[in-house]
Length: 552
Image (cartoon, rainbow, N blue to C red; front, side, top):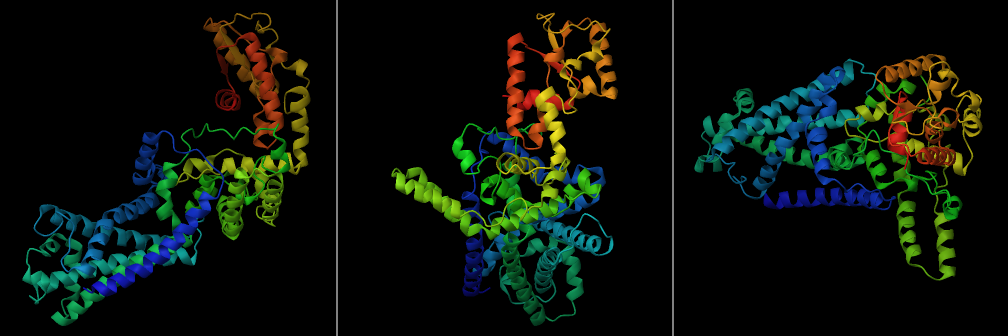
């Protein structure tokens, strides 16, 4: 082909791409730390299952057709990656091929056939994707210009490569043209194993040898330039996930769905002064949370399963992610500067330097408040923290930890939260339950059942943790009674805490009142340790999760 032209094109495209990627990576590095480098084998397996296996796309029956569509496009790109390397090599040396993939090797024929079939499948999937977006009115999809542009680019890449192979096939087998492939017949013969390209060759048989050669050269440059344009578009919008989805899956929480919010140090005076309790400013995102924002595909699956969105409440997780991502980009210079100053502050010893750097850091806060200016208060408090969004996200984005951290900041630092929460929080604080019912009535449901408390039977084998609903809610009390009868029928020696039991504090933590949660947790732990409790059973899923996964 043209080595000089290939060199110039590659240098220009890769320079722009590398500059963009360096900016994106530097921004992530400037965010807060997150420990996601443990249990490497599990993380690699997640990449196999969720990324290469596309589990969350083809695993849900409702989404299976579109899931297979996306999966074939993804797998097609994986196969075509080898082809791309070969084409760049051909730009420097005609007839270049990777080891064992030329026409003199069986692997070359097999790959040519597989690549060709995958191109046909990807092209069909792209046409289907455009049709779905344009005519089927899929509610969860956001029909942006970028979405159509990228789909059309993928289509152009497939068509150009198929026509490139079709042109070569005709030049070799029809025109017997004096070109490299005829002078060296061992090269190019693998095209005979490419059914889609061979079929396409019939469509251009009306072209003479010169026109066919010109078409081949044109399709080569269309494909190469199209790939490089596509590569540079990726970091600029939602298709950044093509690059970031694999690392995002690798760094996903391995404790999901039992990962717990960060335990805040409420005794740290600097944390209160510097507003680092919870998330109050955009620079307080962790690098993993920033990577989540980079990776959002805008597929809309999160909002489709969100009970808040489906009941017309003001939470759209697609908009939530997009808004935070744009805020991150808008504050890029501030965040990078903050990172530099924080490093200097860690090394500073002179009190004057320390005070100066602290003042500079305060001045570098975004002029926009994270909650209020960037994310609306109604949006923040609408979330039920059910995590259905995280269950269906194909790229394993973690939404809820961000929301809880922002609530913690609003509650602890700004004392800004819905006043409707006050009765429930006061009920927890004074009576150990969100309804505010007197704690002395907590064991009334067990009257006449012959149930001992731990105070009466401290040697009981099992503690039955009843929970607030099981103690006070009429419907849930029936569950508690039935469960007691089962234990008694089974001959299990168990006891309850009775009036010593309090709410686990799960509700307080979910709405951001970390102080109340930690207080209740400490009191409950002291009670359990006082009796030497070794085994707990409960009928309440919230109590189970909090006791097992969130208590220290």
